Amino acid sequence: MSNPEAKLNIKEAPGKDAGPENYSHATVEFCEAKLNAEKLHGRNFSAAPMATLSHEAFRRCVEKFGGCSEYFTEMINASSLVNMGPFEKFYLLNGPCPQKIVWQLTGCDSKNFSKATEIITPLGGIGIDLNMGCSAPQIYKTGAGIAWMLKPLEETKNLIKSVKSVLPEHMRLSVKCRLGEEDKNQPAGFNEEKFFAFTDMLVENGVQLITLHPRTMKEKYRLTPKYEYVQKLCERYKGKIKIGLNGAITNQTTLDYALSKAPDADSIMIARELAVRPWIFAELNGKSFSVDREQLALDFIDDVEKYQPKEFYRTRIQRFFSYYCQQFKFGHYFATEILNYKSLEDTRNKVKDYFLKQTEEKILNVNSV
Image (cartoon, rainbow, N blue to C red; front, side, top):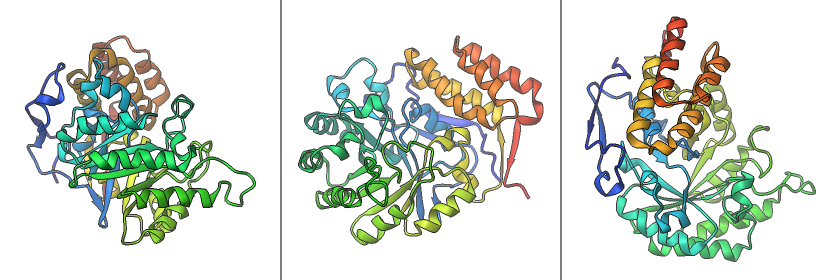
């Protein structure tokens, strides 16, 4: 069995000041064979778009364990990209696997979506994903995210058409969405007719993949997702487009339950649990391997330093470790120490200190017999 912590050979590593112009073909190679965890029973595994987390340093962390079929980027604000602010180039880094990248756009102006698409597509990747599911108030109140599900259908249709018109034929157009807003007068808790009218419009205008997080706008993460609506989309658009399942996949039990409700789902997207256990794709594939959890944490810090601007260090470190620390016996203490961010070097010392005290937690054997 190969060692998932095998030393990396990094080609064309750009350093802190890199931009997409000199990094569109960066790769990661392993000295030993990968775990090959990209698919499960023919279904694609994909890494969800997560703000301040789905960046290159995190992708490199996941890729150590065989990675997945598709890496969705964190939300890229179309207007900010068009105006090309000082940090936008870091959102366009596409390593370590440029061919696996799905660029997710967010915003409220359809004109900027199409302009942003024209900026991104020369960098390659699988395609463009439009965020129509984020229900964070600071997002939807600006007219972005799930607000696109609530706007007049014609307005959202025009957005889809504008992006599709400038998207190269070889690149895919996809949408990530929820079930819509709550409606207590409806048996399902939301307006099914309105939801299917929305997805019909997507399909009719060239969307090739819908990834559904089957919760309503305000359900957040409290309730079990209504996975049966993923299956309904699969049956409704069979032979036309692909349907992805997202939401609350944390282990084999939750995955089995989700697929029992949506057996025809074409892909499985995992979000927050991927930050807790970056090896979860390989774990769900039944691979047996060992994880040096201290070294993984230290490598992540190194990669943040390499692939993020110093202005982002604090938020990227805090975001990742707020999840990663959950797996440990004294995770609350560990996370509290890390979240009190002072510097990258201080963070490295805190990681080393924790594992010096908790030596039995350093190595994790996954799926060991």
